[in-house]
Image 1 (cartoon, one colour):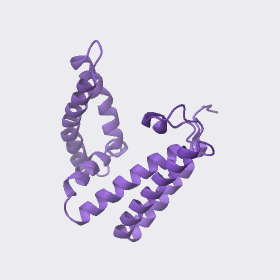
Image 2 (tube, rainbow, N blue to C red):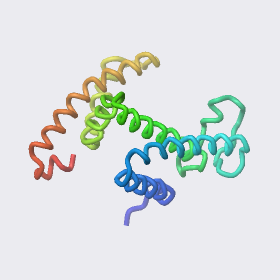
Image 3 (cartoon, helix red, strand yellow):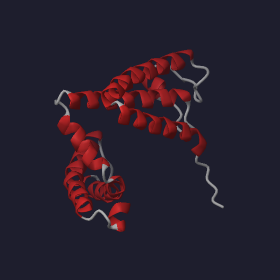
Length: 182
């Protein structure tokens, strides 16, 4: 038996919502993107209401009235305010990118994200090494925010072609179990 303090049960609802949304997108993609934007806006409005009332849905009450106090929500276990905020933003981005693709304006953005999303475990493993190396090179004794952003951009510039290459390799060898795993 494996024991973990990770709260898996509350996240099952998020997984179920994602699966339901995926089925929805299979049936009517354009309608799903529009509804994602509407749902995202509704969730963000609900987030503001929940945080403003500072009661039900907040596992950590606000300590002050600054914007950072509003955004300081509880992720583990996920509070209702945290889920409304993050899922609202995610749905707005998903719907916006989807509609931009339909209008042929955002094709490059979503294609780039999809290229990284086709090799998620490979990207994850590579990013650990790339960013550890960049941290060692760029900021061995600490860093500033500017250095962190520079490392982030340089890391993506390194990871993007590597992940593109790996995606092409996976497509050339569809039956390879090792390539399929990563």
